[in-house]
Length: 222
Image (tube, rainbow, N blue to C red; front, side):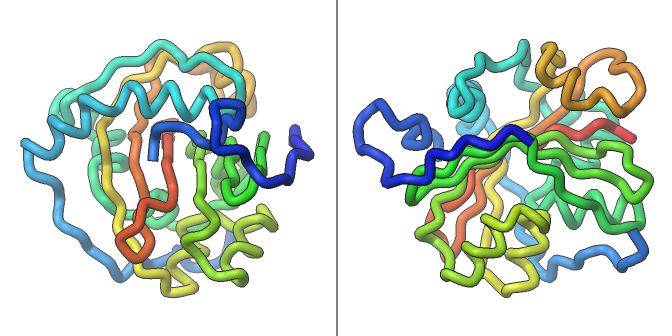
């Protein structure tokens, strides 16, 4: 994993990339929350914000976003739509789909208090990659215990929030088709050759109704 030893108090000005404008044999994780899907009007408003959101997340790591396109849910292939078009944790959705727990691999991380960002993979029990993602977390929104679990980089975020009974709501901004650039292709190299676009979603997790986590979640369709 590429680690960036920048654990420090972040500046309020533009120099801090984390201050962006975007807000196995075990049973699968269960999420008791079942929030309602957004109305079409809310989906349209979220879509208008989604491209800036994507630029911000890749910009945290000094990268330009890959070629991408916002999509209406009905044009996303059925499998990918079922994995992405909801307001549940992806940890829960992927574990239900694959009928096994997924494991976390951190590719890169930046920690500038009070924010923490990382690029990650989630892997199936057989080692294949089922998700590529980027997250940015405002650590002020959780307790010291939960913060420690997140920074330990051992457990998927959704499982941590669920098992610690964090009051949360997931707001999905939009669905995307993404053409994997060399960086993403390299990250997914243990899977078969990527054919055609990948599909993902942009979302925000609210903890106790305060925006806490900005997310890009891209599924491999396995």
